[in-house]
Amino acid sequence: MQVSGGDLQRLRHLNSLSSIRALREAHHPLTLTELAAATGLSRGSVIDLVADLHERGWIAEVDPVPGGMGRPAKRYRFRADAGYALGIDIGVHKILAVVTDLAGRTLASGRAALNRHITRSERLDAVSRAVDAALVAGGLTAQDLWGASIGSIGVVNREGQVTRVEELPDWAGVDLVGHLGRRLPCPIIIENDSKLAALAEQRLGVAAGVSDVVYLHAGRRPGAAIIINGRLHHGFSGATGEVGLMAITGWRTMAGHLENCPVAAGAAPDEAAGIVFRAARNGDPEALAAVDRYAHYLALGTAAMVLTLDPEVVVLGGGFSRSADVLLPALLRALEPHCVRVPEVRPSTLGEECVALGAACLALEYVDERFFSPEGSISDPAAPQSLI
Image 1 (cartoon, rainbow, N blue to C red):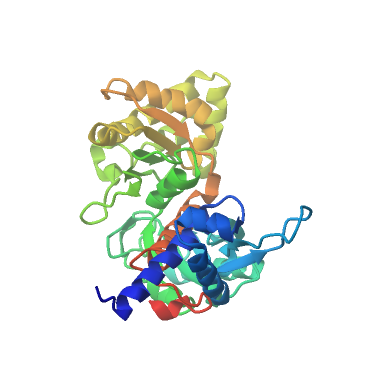
Image 2 (image 1 turned 45 degrees about the vertical axis):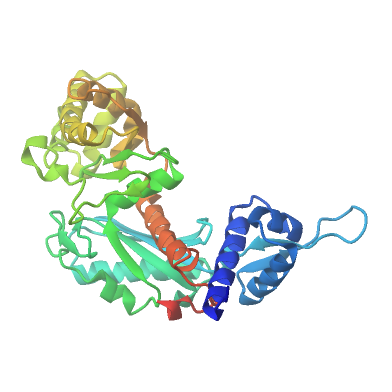
C-alpha cells in the first residue's frame, strides 16, 4: 500500500496532538519513557516529536530530579504559558476582565466600576480600561492572547449579537467584536452572561463534572442558563434560559418584594435585599415573608426548566446567592409543589468573578478546538492569529 505525503503529515499531526494531550493532562512532568507509554508511540517516535514540539515552544524541559544513581532522565511539561485567554464580564455596575493561561489558571484581572446611566460609548471605554489593566497586571500584551470571550448582559443570539437589554436601553445592537477587534488580534466570542456563569460553575465550581445543570442568577436582574450533556445549550436562536421574559413567572418584578419590605424602608434598591436577608436570618417575620415571596416567583421559572430538563443539579448564583443560607431553604419549599423530583440546589462559590471565569473557559474551549483537536492546527504559539 502506498502512503502519501499528506497521510504521513496527518499521522504526525495526530501523534503530536497525542503527545501534547498526555503532557497537558499529566499531574507532573513526564519522561520520554512515560510519554511513550501514555501515547502508545515508540520511544523513537516520541524522541522526534518532543524535539519538534520543544522547538515550536509547545513544551518545555524540566530540571532533573536531584539525587539517584546515574544520569537523570529528561522530563517535559506542557507550556501552559505558551498562550493566554481573556474573559470579560460586562455588567450594569462593573466591568471585570481576567487573563488565564492555557491551563485555565487566572493570572491577572482588571476592573472598572460603572454608573448604570453612562452611555454606550462610555461603557465601551470602560471595557477597554479593564482589559488594559488585566494585561498590564499580567505583564502581557494583546499579542499574547489566543482567544477572548465576553459575557454581556441581555439576550445574545447565536451570531453573538446583543439583541435585547431591558436594563440598558442603548446597549442592544452594540458591536463588541468590532470595538475590541481593533485592540485584540485574537478571535472574540460574545455570549450571554448567565450562560457563561453556568459554564464556570460546570467547569470550575459547585457543578464541576455534572452533565445536566440549571443555573439561576438570583439578583435584582435575574437570569438563567442550561447545560445539557456537559455543554451550554443555546437553542435555535440562543434564547434558552430567558424564562424571566414571561410575565407569569414574575421574574421582572420579584426583586420588588425584597426592596419594598418594611425592614428596608429608605434603603437604596441595591442595598435593600441585603438588609432583608440579614433581618430574615435573625428571624424577622416581615423579612421572612418577603424572602418567601421572592422565592415563590423564582421557583416558578425554575420549575419550568427543571420539569423540562430534569437536571441533576440546580446552581443558585448571582448576588443573592451570598445569602443562600436564607434563600435556598425558601426556594426548595417553593419548588416542592411544582416538581416531580426536586433536584439538589447548590449555592455558587465562585462569587462575582463567575461570569468572567466562564468567559475565559469559553475562550479556552475555542483554543482547544482550534489548536488541540484533530481538525485544528499546531503552529508557532507566538503567532496563533495567523491560523484563523
